[in-house]
Length: 172
Image (cartoon, rainbow, N blue to C red; front, side, top):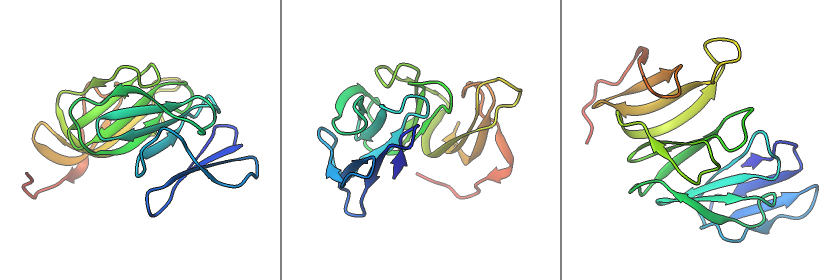
């Protein structure tokens, strides 16, 4: 579930993968244009904007989650895991996937990848290292062949591991 920036709309992915929307105490209804089971998120700045990802497609809604349209692609991935949204800048989104980490600053129209990341299972944005800076990026990922938990304070350019958070198992 994700809630619009102003709290008036709720987008909900049910346990069966249906994507439903409700606005200002209205009943939940099916969204249009977004595949079932999609990963979803709300823009934190613009209350009308919601995002979705399914397979290699990225979707946007500009009408409070009622209808979605394809806005961009996530390379050759087949499984997006999570969408993280900048808390104060509209259209600045991150997507963790089975083939890497993707970042867009234009509402998902175009994505850049972080080359050292070959897989990213989870992502979150946190307090910036310095006041007024870009949020810290936390990822559970495979970076340069090593799985672990990483933090970046430079928009993902460098991803040093958090102390003691490297996984010792070998993965495929």
